[in-house]
Length: 228
Image 1 (cartoon, rainbow, N blue to C red):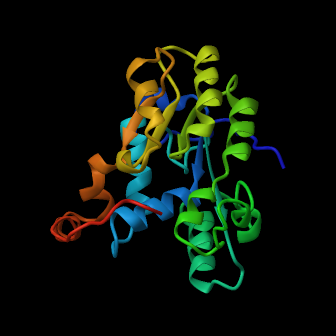
Image 2 (cartoon, rainbow, N blue to C red):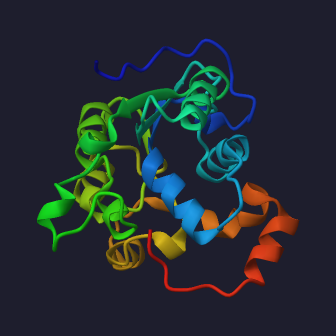
Protein backbone atom coordinates (compact mmCIF):
# COMPACT_ATOMS: atom_id res chain seq x y z
CA UNK A 1 0.00 0.00 0.00
CA UNK A 2 1.50 3.39 -0.95
CA UNK A 3 2.10 6.00 1.72
CA UNK A 4 -0.46 8.77 1.47
CA UNK A 5 -0.04 12.26 2.82
CA UNK A 6 -3.18 13.68 4.41
CA UNK A 7 -4.28 17.30 4.17
CA UNK A 8 -3.70 19.36 7.33
CA UNK A 9 -6.64 19.24 9.70
CA UNK A 10 -5.21 20.79 12.86
CA UNK A 11 -1.98 22.53 13.89
CA UNK A 12 0.89 20.66 15.49
CA UNK A 13 1.31 21.07 19.21
CA UNK A 14 4.94 22.07 18.60
CA UNK A 15 3.89 25.42 17.19
CA UNK A 16 6.59 26.01 14.53
CA UNK A 17 5.19 27.64 11.39
CA UNK A 18 7.35 25.53 9.09
CA UNK A 19 5.72 22.34 10.30
CA UNK A 20 2.50 23.23 8.46
CA UNK A 21 3.99 21.77 5.27
CA UNK A 22 3.16 18.07 4.79
CA UNK A 23 5.97 15.83 5.98
CA UNK A 24 6.86 12.16 6.08
CA UNK A 25 9.15 10.81 8.77
CA UNK A 26 10.56 7.44 7.70
CA UNK A 27 12.04 5.31 10.47
CA UNK A 28 14.14 2.17 10.27
CA UNK A 29 12.81 0.82 13.56
CA UNK A 30 15.07 -2.20 13.72
CA UNK A 31 18.23 -0.14 13.18
CA UNK A 32 17.09 2.37 15.80
CA UNK A 33 16.31 -0.28 18.39
CA UNK A 34 19.49 -2.27 17.83
CA UNK A 35 21.71 0.82 18.01
CA UNK A 36 20.06 2.17 21.16
CA UNK A 37 20.34 -1.23 22.82
CA UNK A 38 24.04 -1.49 21.98
CA UNK A 39 25.06 2.08 22.78
CA UNK A 40 22.93 2.46 25.91
CA UNK A 41 22.86 -1.06 27.24
CA UNK A 42 20.18 -1.67 29.82
CA UNK A 43 18.39 1.63 29.11
CA UNK A 44 15.07 2.08 27.36
CA UNK A 45 14.59 4.64 24.63
CA UNK A 46 11.63 6.93 25.33
CA UNK A 47 9.85 7.10 21.99
CA UNK A 48 7.63 9.98 23.02
CA UNK A 49 10.73 12.01 23.78
CA UNK A 50 12.23 10.90 20.46
CA UNK A 51 9.25 12.46 18.72
CA UNK A 52 9.71 15.68 20.69
CA UNK A 53 13.42 15.85 19.79
CA UNK A 54 12.81 15.26 16.09
CA UNK A 55 9.97 17.79 15.95
CA UNK A 56 11.96 20.42 17.83
CA UNK A 57 15.33 19.98 16.15
CA UNK A 58 14.02 19.18 12.67
CA UNK A 59 11.03 21.57 12.63
CA UNK A 60 8.80 18.61 11.86
CA UNK A 61 5.08 18.13 12.51
CA UNK A 62 4.08 15.77 15.28
CA UNK A 63 2.27 12.49 14.52
CA UNK A 64 -0.99 13.99 15.76
CA UNK A 65 -0.82 16.74 13.15
CA UNK A 66 -2.84 16.13 10.01
CA UNK A 67 0.15 17.24 7.93
CA UNK A 68 2.36 14.43 9.23
CA UNK A 69 2.92 10.81 8.35
CA UNK A 70 5.30 8.86 10.60
CA UNK A 71 6.15 5.43 9.21
CA UNK A 72 8.32 2.77 10.83
CA UNK A 73 9.68 -0.37 9.17
CA UNK A 74 10.63 -3.16 11.54
CA UNK A 75 11.39 -6.82 11.87
CA UNK A 76 8.61 -8.39 13.92
CA UNK A 77 7.70 -11.80 15.23
CA UNK A 78 4.10 -12.50 16.19
CA UNK A 79 5.43 -14.87 18.86
CA UNK A 80 7.28 -12.05 20.64
CA UNK A 81 4.64 -10.71 23.03
CA UNK A 82 6.71 -7.77 24.25
CA UNK A 83 7.50 -6.65 20.75
CA UNK A 84 3.85 -6.97 19.76
CA UNK A 85 2.84 -4.74 22.68
CA UNK A 86 5.39 -2.13 21.65
CA UNK A 87 4.24 -2.11 18.02
CA UNK A 88 0.63 -1.77 19.15
CA UNK A 89 1.77 1.17 21.29
CA UNK A 90 3.52 2.71 18.28
CA UNK A 91 0.38 2.43 16.18
CA UNK A 92 -2.24 3.36 18.74
CA UNK A 93 -0.45 5.79 21.07
CA UNK A 94 2.30 7.29 18.91
CA UNK A 95 0.10 7.38 15.79
CA UNK A 96 2.78 5.76 13.66
CA UNK A 97 2.18 3.55 10.67
CA UNK A 98 4.09 0.31 11.28
CA UNK A 99 5.35 -1.85 8.41
CA UNK A 100 6.04 -5.29 9.89
CA UNK A 101 8.28 -7.88 8.25
CA UNK A 102 9.07 -11.40 9.37
CA UNK A 103 12.61 -11.65 10.78
CA UNK A 104 13.75 -13.88 7.92
CA UNK A 105 12.53 -11.27 5.40
CA UNK A 106 14.26 -8.35 7.14
CA UNK A 107 17.82 -9.11 6.07
CA UNK A 108 19.28 -7.26 3.08
CA UNK A 109 20.81 -10.57 2.08
CA UNK A 110 20.96 -14.06 3.49
CA UNK A 111 23.35 -14.01 6.49
CA UNK A 112 24.62 -17.50 5.76
CA UNK A 113 26.05 -16.24 2.45
CA UNK A 114 28.24 -13.67 4.22
CA UNK A 115 31.22 -15.45 5.72
CA UNK A 116 28.92 -18.06 7.25
CA UNK A 117 27.17 -15.66 9.62
CA UNK A 118 24.44 -17.22 11.72
CA UNK A 119 21.13 -15.29 11.51
CA UNK A 120 21.04 -14.84 15.30
CA UNK A 121 24.61 -13.51 15.61
CA UNK A 122 25.23 -9.91 16.67
CA UNK A 123 27.17 -9.20 13.49
CA UNK A 124 24.26 -10.43 11.36
CA UNK A 125 21.99 -7.76 12.81
CA UNK A 126 23.96 -5.22 10.77
CA UNK A 127 22.16 -6.74 7.79
CA UNK A 128 18.69 -6.01 9.16
CA UNK A 129 17.80 -2.84 7.26
CA UNK A 130 14.90 -1.52 5.18
CA UNK A 131 16.88 0.66 2.80
CA UNK A 132 15.03 -0.32 -0.37
CA UNK A 133 11.59 0.37 1.06
CA UNK A 134 12.68 3.68 2.59
CA UNK A 135 14.41 4.83 -0.61
CA UNK A 136 11.28 3.94 -2.62
CA UNK A 137 9.13 5.97 -0.22
CA UNK A 138 11.50 8.93 -0.50
CA UNK A 139 11.26 8.87 -4.28
CA UNK A 140 7.48 8.81 -4.19
CA UNK A 141 7.15 11.60 -1.63
CA UNK A 142 10.01 14.03 -2.25
CA UNK A 143 8.12 16.39 -4.53
CA UNK A 144 5.10 16.56 -2.23
CA UNK A 145 6.41 16.97 1.30
CA UNK A 146 9.36 17.39 3.61
CA UNK A 147 11.31 14.25 4.38
CA UNK A 148 13.03 13.05 7.51
CA UNK A 149 14.77 9.70 7.80
CA UNK A 150 15.86 7.88 10.94
CA UNK A 151 18.54 5.46 9.77
CA UNK A 152 22.27 4.82 9.99
CA UNK A 153 22.56 3.35 6.52
CA UNK A 154 24.74 4.88 3.82
CA UNK A 155 22.86 2.90 1.20
CA UNK A 156 20.07 5.50 1.27
CA UNK A 157 22.48 8.44 0.86
CA UNK A 158 22.09 8.82 -2.89
CA UNK A 159 18.29 8.80 -2.68
CA UNK A 160 18.30 11.31 0.18
CA UNK A 161 20.75 13.63 -1.55
CA UNK A 162 18.67 13.55 -4.73
CA UNK A 163 15.58 14.61 -2.81
CA UNK A 164 17.46 17.75 -1.79
CA UNK A 165 17.59 18.75 -5.45
CA UNK A 166 13.80 19.00 -5.70
CA UNK A 167 12.85 20.50 -2.35
CA UNK A 168 12.88 24.01 -0.88
CA UNK A 169 16.43 25.02 0.05
CA UNK A 170 15.08 26.46 3.29
CA UNK A 171 13.67 23.08 4.30
CA UNK A 172 16.30 20.43 3.54
CA UNK A 173 15.69 16.75 4.29
CA UNK A 174 16.52 15.60 7.78
CA UNK A 175 18.69 12.63 8.76
CA UNK A 176 18.62 11.53 12.39
CA UNK A 177 20.49 8.79 14.19
CA UNK A 178 23.02 8.15 16.92
CA UNK A 179 26.21 9.71 15.61
CA UNK A 180 28.39 6.99 17.10
CA UNK A 181 26.47 4.34 15.18
CA UNK A 182 26.11 6.23 11.89
CA UNK A 183 27.89 4.68 8.91
CA UNK A 184 31.20 6.58 8.85
CA UNK A 185 30.82 7.35 5.14
CA UNK A 186 28.03 9.75 6.04
CA UNK A 187 30.49 12.04 7.82
CA UNK A 188 32.18 13.27 4.65
CA UNK A 189 28.82 13.83 2.96
CA UNK A 190 27.43 15.80 5.89
CA UNK A 191 30.54 18.00 6.08
CA UNK A 192 31.18 18.62 2.38
CA UNK A 193 28.15 17.98 0.17
CA UNK A 194 25.96 21.09 -0.34
CA UNK A 195 22.95 18.79 -0.71
CA UNK A 196 23.59 17.16 2.66
CA UNK A 197 20.56 16.70 4.91
CA UNK A 198 20.26 18.43 8.24
CA UNK A 199 21.75 15.91 10.66
CA UNK A 200 20.32 15.39 14.13
CA UNK A 201 22.76 13.46 16.30
CA UNK A 202 20.61 11.60 18.81
CA UNK A 203 23.65 11.06 21.04
CA UNK A 204 23.47 14.79 21.80
CA UNK A 205 20.04 14.23 23.34
CA UNK A 206 20.76 11.00 25.21
CA UNK A 207 19.91 12.56 28.57
CA UNK A 208 16.43 13.33 27.30
CA UNK A 209 15.95 10.13 25.35
CA UNK A 210 17.02 7.74 28.11
CA UNK A 211 16.86 9.80 31.30
CA UNK A 212 19.82 11.83 32.56
CA UNK A 213 20.55 9.78 35.68
CA UNK A 214 20.44 6.49 33.82
CA UNK A 215 22.69 7.78 31.05
CA UNK A 216 25.20 9.08 33.60
CA UNK A 217 25.33 5.63 35.18
CA UNK A 218 25.75 3.95 31.79
CA UNK A 219 28.60 6.29 30.84
CA UNK A 220 30.51 5.18 33.93
CA UNK A 221 30.39 1.58 32.76
CA UNK A 222 33.29 0.30 30.59
CA UNK A 223 32.35 -0.14 26.94
CA UNK A 224 33.65 -2.59 24.37
CA UNK A 225 33.77 -2.13 20.62
CA UNK A 226 30.53 -1.02 19.04
CA UNK A 227 28.84 -3.92 17.28
CA UNK A 228 25.12 -4.47 16.83
